[in-house]
Image 1 (spheres, one colour):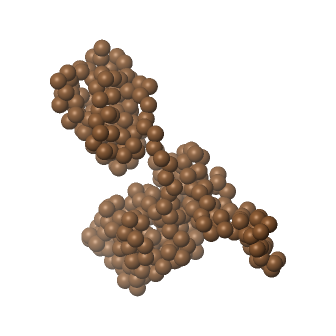
Image 2 (cartoon, one colour; image 1 turned 120 degrees about the vertical axis):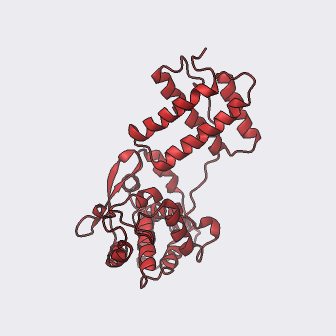
Image 3 (cartoon, one colour; image 1 turned 45 degrees about the vertical axis):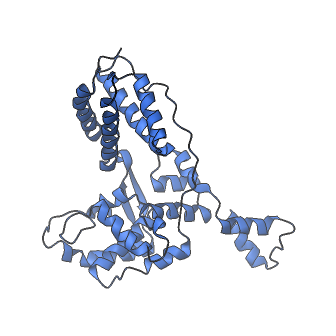
Length: 318
C-alpha cells in the first residue's frame, strides 16, 4: 500500500513537482500549465471517490471515466502521461512505495497527417500584413520566422535581440529542454526582420531596455496569445479558420522542405526534434508530388516527352 493515501496530502507534492519541472527539467511554461491542469483534474475525480486511496484501481477508473466522458484518446494519453510523471517523481522522493501507473497501457489513437498550407497559400498569406506600418512590419516578420525557420510559437516568443546572428544569416533558437539550434535565415525572413528592426524602437519607447525581439504595443515581450492572433489575422483571409493558427506554419515548413527533396535528418535538426520518429510524420506524400511520381513512373501515364520537363519531375522525386 502506498504511503500517500489521501488527496489532501497530494497538494503539497504537486506544487513541489511543478517546481521541480521548472527548475530542474527546464519545462516550458505551456508544459507546466498543462501538467498542473491535468493533475488538478485528476484531484477532482479523486476527491469524489469513496475510497480515497491512491491505487492502480483508482487510476484505471479515472482513465475509464475520461473515455466515457468523450475525451479524445490523445487527451486521455496526455493526462495519463502527466500522472505517470508525477507518480515517478513521488516514488523517487519516497512519497510512494509503488507506482500506481506502472504498466498501464495508453489508448490507441489514429495517426493524423499534419495539416499544412500550400506554397501558393503561404505566398498569399505573406501579402496580408502591411509592412509600411509598424504593426504590419512586426506581423510579417513573425509570419516569415514561423514559416521560414519552422519555429514553435513559444520559441518565437522567447527570442531575444541577440538571437539574430550578424549579419542576420542565422537564428539562434532555444527549443524544448533548452536544446539550442541554429536555423538559417532565408532572404525573405532577413528582409522582414530588417524592416521590423527599423520600427521596433517605436514600440520600445516605454520599456527601452526590453530585450525581446518582438514587442507588443506597450513595449513588452509579445505573449503567445498575441502571436496567435497576429498569425490568425493574416491566415484567416487566405484559408479556412480551422487552419488559421501558428503551428500550421511549422507543419508547412517541414512539408515543403521534404517535398522539395530535403534530407529527413536535416529537417529533424531544423525543427529541433529529439527523435527522428517525430519528424517522420511529415513524410506524407502531397497530391502534387504523388502525381509527379505517377507521371514519371507509370508506363500508361502519358509521360511528358520534353526532356527538360522530365528532368524537373525527376528532381522533385529525388
